[in-house]
Image (cartoon, rainbow, N blue to C red; front, top):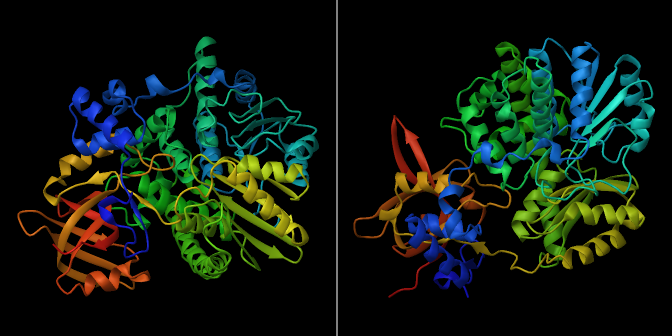
Length: 583
């Protein structure tokens, strides 16, 4: 049953409210924890038992950080790493070209620099070398280094790691493992097939952080100085966790919460420069990491110099940071232009194929491999289904996919590769990459659609908007938003709270830029709220609200604090609206 009777909103969506079970759970939390109703609804939606509600709002690393030794090969990895440090050996870090890879590399580079060692950074070119270790690069690194640490990659790289004959190799990764592991010193990966899966939600940077925790433990046991302050490195872990769409559950909640506090202190030159150029004017939150900082760090690996993001995050020079931040910002602007062209073509193709299947996909000749993942994310958001976008160069296509909570895309992609429908493929639950030949495209996508359907993909409406409940404008206070933030951080598997504000009149509406809309809304009594609707004129939302003719509307979106001139006020980031029935 639709919420507030909204079957088709101004953006074409049906509104879905809390289930009766969620409402009952929220009532129980309210009775036991004495929390605001809106907070109770969010906790109930996240499945937090009433008895655990207050503790959930204060996640701590002390309580939630797992024992590093619960991961296989961890002790061996840390021991070999510390041996290289003690013997002043030559160390190379081979990293993936995305935010998680760059953050993972920066963690090691910064830690080693503070221990007096400068490691070599190697990030493969997305187009020329592709994802992960390759034999020529590994052989060359092995020729002049004693230890190679592969971060955010390497679990499936048997031949490239074998090519590093004269060096030891450690893999710190989180991508889905195969039946066998590469022959090396250690493969630390919560998604190895012989792991329990309890920590499968960790990104690679979190795995690297745990290795540094284990290294600290081993140094302490040996009676040696324990090395750099690990808490000061959590800004990098938080950035990677959010940008890599890792589920914000378990230890990830505490890692991100603490990492945001570290980032707010503005001690890392690269993140300070990037925050300033992105015009971040408030304390960082998970939205900033995922949508302002992450895309800029990623831009180098997508369409520019592959190692630029990692070098920015690792630098201790303010001047270098400002130069690299400017370069990444420019690359990000170029990336958006490329993305917009591919997105328009992909969406048109996907709509023609139909957005109600378990899998939404699109392909095109010459589509830049650096943007297919972002476009897949856009398709996923539009259709509320897993999405694949593939760019072909001749007969070979390279693509990227994004999934939905509860649907393991990486495992399905890996199965297709094992069945011979893909040249190669892998990833994790929420994101995956693949290479496919043109003559196998249709059967591969059909097979993938079947596998995803068995996991429940496509069961929901393609445009459902899920809401946590209804609020009146007078209840939307700065204090309430601060309490809601305690239930975060929000992101993958923990979507930000969205509320409906029913039966409001438009007091003021002004178009901002090309497609945004600023609004002032009122319930006609004592309550009112300001709102911003980004991209409103890309749908019927902007034209109808700005030419309202006195009509009243139900509106829906996320509450946020707007800081201006030292004062704080409530603002609604408006996602959708529907005309209220006339009484």
